[in-house]
Image 1 (tube, rainbow over the protein chains, first blue to last red):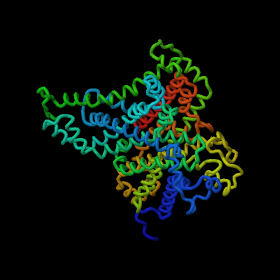
Image 2: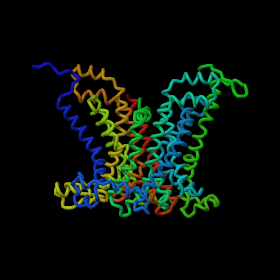
Image 3: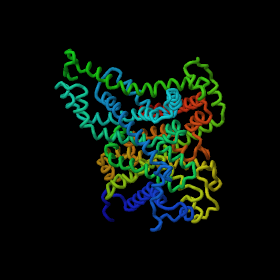
Image 4: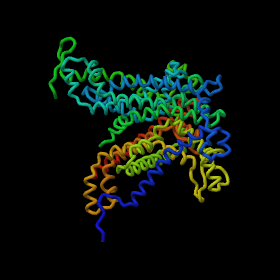
Length: 289
Length: 319
């Protein structure tokens, strides 16, 4: 009888099974994205004729779907460029407002033992978990009454409100991981609260703040429901997700839709992988226990 | 407690608790303003709306007239078979997605636990469906499942010999070997698992990094096989994060709107509660009814969560 295999080395069959599983997972995860990309490079008629022939022949490749999607209607396109700018403006403003509010709130939640802190933290968690769709009804009514439902400002306000709880949660995790002694020293040396936050806390917490900003950007960039609810009547104000979904209802060739959809993916993917490590820390810290 | 003392602007020294109190309230004020304006007041309003007759055309006159209280919104909702159907669909949709998403995430995290060359790249690539904007994911899936030129139907017709294309996004029930299955609902569930499993994978992977291998090595030396090690040693340590993920995924999927609305617009038996709220508000222009649907939806969710918390607490007590 041979000696037992090293106790922790798995059976070769198990290893093979594991790699087959990983390969299948990769195909399933990336296959559809690759499929969408390949189709976006081909003429629509070629797809209808040969839906199974995925690889574009060399002469067939053309990027005109991307330009057609982006250009304004008077230049023969579908105006997605305009929608992307709307999305970008709303998302960037959301980041600024949500991050400023959240840095203050999260610092208080992480460090300061003030009266009512428990209640405030519980409310923030409750808001985060409460069905957002339910609050959409009164929010719609309130903003309609204020005359803001037909504008990007109304959308911005809603986005700030929906991203603040999750941003506070993430930032609090980052702040708690920082050493407290420097802040204490700065206060003892006579720094005001604002000086201390700006010159002591923020430089150290910057990676966490950037990661949170990326996450807020992803939420705002992705949001569809409120954009549909507020802006569907005004084509000039459509955000990128709303624009693409509305174009799908007209007879826009699917290659153009795919090109547009993949074009709006690029900024998110780039930002995500840029901030990935810090994002994972911030999102999963609460799961440790 | 440290006895650090700082000088207040007016020269009065502040103790640490006093200082924390003042600064804490100062720093939390913007957050509280946002939360009160965007959550607390709307929450009160949704209750008021649900118990009153109010439609979209009434918005300009809102606040000028006294509220007429009524239970009609609830009476109509509860007496409507489509409400109960939407509730059932939502529960099935959220449960299946929760199981699938956490299950797939767990399997992936365990499969990628042992280091190998290129593991970092594989991990990053597996996150792509989660990072992809919903609109991009939906556009790709709609194309893939399209009856005329979609890859799946083309493959089915030309390779598997299907007689006709399958409308994956508008078929309420399909017979598979004589068994009726809710086809479109399952497609939407698979889509939701596809986009959300990477997040479960991320959470479980993070927790797995804190699981020390020494106990497993000891168990293996004592002759435990791979399944026993996973089942008896690794899984109990992952229980916390798995329960948390199940909870969050259920809550999120229970109220999800965009995925289903974009994929099917509620066709093929995928009319979930969130779509009902939207239809009542926008298509039927009935604010009161939309608020009632939303409120009932929250009541169901909160009661389920209460049961869940009570059960998991009792389980801990028994242990």
